Length: 345
Image (cartoon, rainbow, N blue to C red; front, side, top):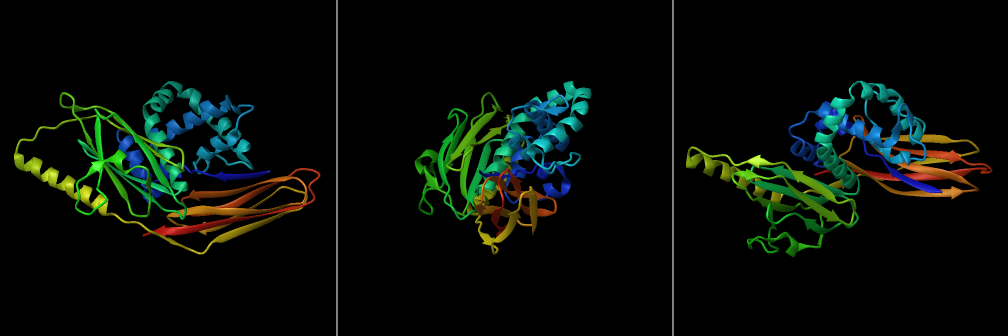
């Protein structure tokens, strides 16, 4: 059996050092969607979500797919990782359950409020591992999001869903200097390393911009759903104040549309693991990079075993690792994991 796992690490929202890294734009997604909430509130919301889905008191729920739960836990300080996904979830349940019970009312309230912000961040991180980057910018009456592709494989934007009575979304015309066009006239679209920017004008209702949702679909599922928080229309005392803010906004939109990204890839790295009648793990530190991706796996099974190539990110950098399980009567197996890292320029 062959298993491939991409581990999403929450340390990017949980430590100051990680928060400084915004190469994939996901920090902006979290800060703009959850701008009213603290980092600690975001952390609590994630832990409550994992506890509800994967814990039964101080132990793990039986019959559960622990891979997903463990993905959310790797890298969170204060919780021990286990030898496998199930043990990692078990350690978390045992450590967090008493804290959760002492603060259940407050933690539950925080979880409900912050849920959309954490959900958008998780979607953004999932898509970043598949080579899709999002760069959002939000003003009172305007929402701009830039999309770019960072890997060597094609990614297509297949659809965009929003309520036209709340948002009017356009993109630059295909010819330089041409008028903007409705976003649906430019879809489906093949992403490149040049940012494709979507500008959405918000519609005010009685001086208030209601909450709005925009869903961006690509063939690198899942869809990215962004909730634009409500806001009020501010009155300006002087026309010059309004003109100044409008000029600043237009300049930011122009810069967003002109942003260009490329990836400088380094030589591929590999890790080899030979199993002889016992489970084994191996790790290779890849160092700090803006982005890394799994390139593939090579297997040689003599009889029966299970393997996994893991690509994780932490404060110290990226790590390529493999976990190799032995199932009798397997007499020996080999796995080689390949990965490549690069710098966004």
